[in-house]
Length: 442
Image 1 (cartoon, rainbow, N blue to C red):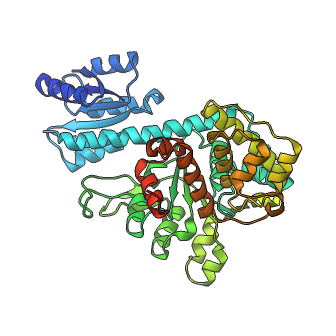
Image 2 (cartoon, rainbow, N blue to C red):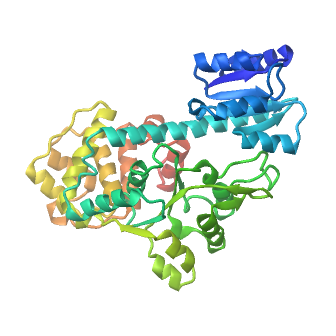
Image 3 (cartoon, one colour):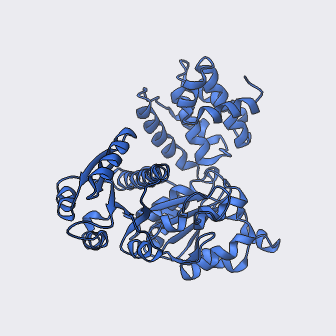
């Protein structure tokens, strides 16, 4: 990440410059507004650390000029001042500052801030790469053979032009997240953030802060202001995955944001405005949750302005070869491995299997097929991985069983090398350790 530090005090500027360099940040300096603009025009920077008082212009004037040029939309601006006040901070934020810090600078806080910015920029970069990939390649995964799935894609494309909420339903692993990303990529918000959040993966006492953000000191451990997903996704799309798991007490707050686009951060008194398109997803029957009082009726009707139900893979078996070839080719290139060839008997065997884990299970199967590099025939590979023969191709396995078998197969194939196994599975060593412990394997 590249930083431009603008400060007319040579002592503090040099000290901060040396410190940022020691932390691995590429840094350049400027002492005046004129020099600042010259540097910005000649080089690309990710972050601008801007002093409030400069000899030729104030920091606020510089922010005002930067706001007029779309070239600097992706430049994150942080205001630095020796005389901080709430009024000045609010004014700086209104003119596009990401944050406002006072001198003497708390270096620990500054590094935390830069790391957070770096993480957010990485998310946006990955999103842009995904959109480029989605729009530039011939997406077999979208050009499904089944009538039902083509109807899903066509409906998603029609819905994308609207700003109204969308509810995606379907079993685990059918690809609700892919459809959500497709809707975003085809919408007028495609050049803005796509921000996913799994409502089931975050503890009840933390989900509110994740969604709406929090102010410094609002609870134990809140050492700085944190922006929530609604702020990060501003002018883009917020994907609420597993919305059926959201606690009823939080559903009313979510409804208010969807209704009027405003909310308060935890511990905050400032009303925050946001403009997001909501795409929600669930594998649960929300109407049953309504009947049991576990989901608000008003929220349900608000998020289901448009509703797309994604059928399970077993109901569209003609798509299995399409997904299979797509994943096999993608994973083989990823690991620089030879692509296996399938004959009609192989396809029939795979199409006869019920795929209880849907597309997610099929992708895991393809990865195992490529990574484990069996030397026997394709049919035997299929039997080994799915643990079936043609007579039991319709046996149902739970996702937990499939994941366990996949992890243990890779672990044994690597000679029980945990580091290599974690790399192949693309999980952390701690996650692998916990999984092996759960399976009773050391």
